[in-house]
Image (cartoon, rainbow, N blue to C red; front, side):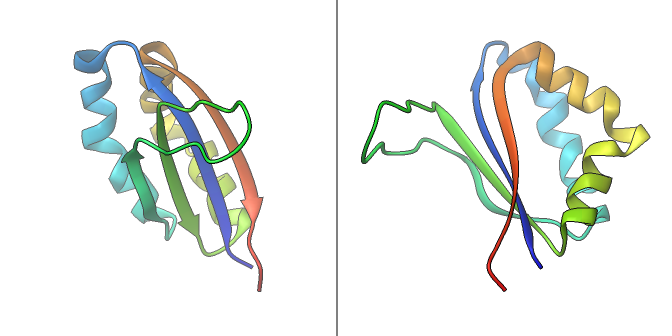
Length: 96
């Protein structure tokens, strides 16, 4: 079953964030992932959720998505994202 990582984020330090933007696609691809949405500004249609930017990644399975998040070589990149953005991340499985 396909799995999706949904990231809601606001960049606070663009220059500091750029190394993450440049390097993270390698790790996404390593785990069979692909961008469905890449850093777009959403239009809120209902409710009081107000994300600034969204990324949606699709992986072949939950295990692939979790492998991506746990990859030791990617941890320094995740630290960059944590330091330079305010972000929320969820993992969800899709319909078969």
